[in-house]
Each structure stands twice: as structure tokens, then as C-alpha cells.
Amino acid sequence: MAESSKVIHVRNVGHEISENDLLQLFQPFGVITKLVMLRAKNQALLQMQDVSSAITALQFFTNVQPTIRGRNVYIQFSSHQELTTAEQNIHGREDEVCNSYYHLKSKMYVGVIFNYVILTFLFTLHSSFLSIFFFFLSWWVVQPNRILLVTVHHMLYPITVDVLHQVFSPYGFVEKIVTFQKSAGFQALIQYQAQQCAASARTALQGRNIYDGCCQLDIQFSNLEELQVNYNNDRSRDYTNPNLPSEQKGRLPHPGYGDTGVAYPQMANTSAIAAAFGGGLPPGITGANDRCTILVSNLNTDSVDEDKLFNLFSLYGNIVRIKLLRNKPDHALVQMGDGFQAELAVHFLKGAMLFGKRLEVNYSKHPNITPGTDSHDYVNSNLNRFNRNAAKNYRYCCSPTRMIHLSTLPQDVTEEEVVNHVQEHGAILNTKVFEMNGKKQALVQFENEEEAAEALVCKHATSLGGSIIRISFSQLQTI
Image (cartoon, rainbow, N blue to C red; front, side):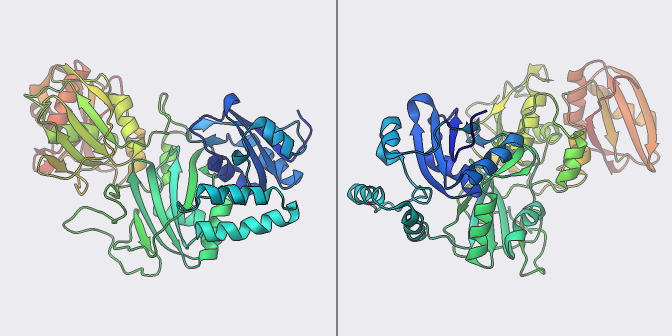
């Protein structure tokens, strides 16, 4: 291992990674005085103000894999003890060498000539005055306020308002939180009582993970002056007004932060969801997807409609909206509650057989489905399975099986009534009606997975003996 140095060597720095990305990753550990981007080698050299800051950064990233824009980067001490002006000219252009404060977003009206004069002046300053100069420059350029825009990357588990409040409240009184989903992924606006609290939270939490190895925070200052919160629930909260209602009546949730800022339902009880997977995710699930809309193709146009697709895809998450494409009748768009739920649906349903067709299930290029007469809205449907007992439903996510599980049956239901209700969809090999926790349930085993899937999409949420039954796939092999 190289000797400890205040210069950090960063590898695997792709062209999509900017200087500002690197600065945001290392700023929580101390003041950054110099940065050199070695674009030809996909590397960078970054100098902290002192050796102890660099040691702290490397110790932290020993246990946490540093990731920028979805790319793992690798860090170690540099053989350089300090970056000199000569070394900067060897390794990269002068305009790529800058103090951390300067790399905060500059206003567009700062022209090329002004930048050149500033850079020339900076390299002549004594290092003891450099940080002071940039402090006042960054205050003028960035104009931090009390509202933070937070983006969560690599979201293995859904994040709720309560989780965000627990993370951000140690830095000051949090007045309001609004969460929403955009093409960049899950985002939140967090309003503090004081601007200083927001600045402290950003400095301390930028680039950190909410959970080990996932849910990485990317924090910027928002340009909003005040958040408007209409409901206190898992998606938004006004801590200064606890009397707000928890439900919306008669319209879709829309907090008004951009034309794609629909507040999708995020699951509560994150720790329980993590426990549902036994502390890890199913094989093949990364938890890193942030696309919520799915494109389903090769549908049987004579048999499939929006409600049948809802019955199938709601096994893997809450459904916001579904749209059949009129110009491509065998195609449909399905908008899930968040990227994690969409990944579950794509993973488990790709290649599944339904009404004689093998489904093609992929992520759509569209971030969401625009409401309209040609789309069906389900965001407020009480048939969405993940509003309650979310952890239980995650635990039962699987590819279609030949066994279906029926619940919420009438107490006096008979095995014959269950068989009669579903037998039109295929050959039934075995059936069992049983009682659990005082509630009647049933298992029905079909000859193959396609028949079971057809019974599920056609009979879920239908009436049997006066009760609206719910159907899911069972992971049991035999009854």
C-alpha cells in the first residue's frame, strides 16, 4: 500500500463523470484544494487540505464501495505528496485544476474571459488565502437555501417520508418533505427551518448511503422558495401542520414539481421489506433500476385488456397507470409504483406464457404514462396489493407457477365451488381448501403455468359467494 498522502488517486473515472461529481463524493471528508482529471487514462488526482482528511476518506471507502453515476470508482493514496503547478500542466489542462468550491455550479453569465482572469489570479494567491476567497465566491455563485433536492440512487428498498426524516432531522428542524418519481429516479424535496441546517445536512450526507451498499444520496440545493404540502402520508409530510388529511379525494397525487413529478406510492416499513428478502435480494435482482414504466409486447389482443394486465403486474408492485397502444394492438405500457417494483415485474414476467403468447417484458423509454382517455388509472385502486402488508407481498414475488393461492374466500366456501369458479381455464390436478388465522383460503394446482396465469388474470378480484377474492401464484410445488 502506498504511503499516506493528502493526494488521492481515483481510477475508473468514466467520461460521464465530471469534476463536480468527484468533488461531491469527497467533500464530506474535508476541504479539497486541487483536482486533476486524467481523461486519457480514466483517472483523477485529488488533493485534500491535509493528510488526515485523505486518511478518513480512504478508511470510509474501505467498507463502502464508492459509486458515481452508477460506476464503481477505486481509490488509493497517490505516490504524489502534493500536486504542484508543474504536475498540473503535465497531467491536465489548467482549467481542470480547481478548488472544490469553484466547482460548484457557476452562473451562466460568468463568461470565458472572467473565468480566465479568476484562474490566473487564483494560482498567484498564497494557499492560506485560497480557501477564504473561494468561500465567498461559492456563496455568491451557489446561493444555498433551506430546501434540498435529494435524489436516491441504487434504491434497493423503497424510501418513505419517515425514513428521510430520520436521516435528515439530526441536522435541524425539518419543516416539510415531498417525495416524487422522475426520470432521474426517486427524489425528494426537504425543507428545513433554517438555511444553515440545509447546508450542514448537504455537507454531511452528500454521497452517503442510507443503508449499507445502497440508497445513495445525491443532494443539491433547490431553487424553490417554499414547499406546498396538501397531505400527510408516506409520500409527503408537513411537520408544522399535523392536521392535514392523509388521503386524496377525487384526483391523482401531483405535488406540482415538474410535469412528470407524479408522487408514486412508496412502500412503508422499509426494514420489514428488507427482512422479507432475508436480508438480500432474489437472484438476478439488482435493485438499481430507476425506470418505472414497462413495455409489454406480443399480447393476445383478443383476450387481454387493461384489467387483466393489472391483475398480473400488481403481483410485483402498485400500478399507477396502464395504456394499450392503439397503433400497436399487441403492445401495452404499464407504469409501476417505483423502479424496484418495475424491476421485479420485468425479471419475473419476461418470457411468461399468457393466452397462448410468450410475453416480451422490457423497460420503456417513456418515464411515465400521460393521463388521458386512452389510459386507465389505478393509482387510487384499493386492489393495489402493496398498500398494506407490503413485506408479505414482496416475499411472495416469483415467476408464474402452476399453483395459485386464493384468499378472502367466504367462510362457508366448499372445494367444489372453488373448482367450479376456475376450472374453465385449464385442467385442475389438485385442490385444497383450508383455514388460516380464522380465514378461508385455497390452493389450486393446474397442469401448467400458462393455465394458472390465465385463471389468475381472469378471476382475481371477482366475486365468489359474495366475497371479492384475491389470487396470487404459490411457490409450493405440490399440495
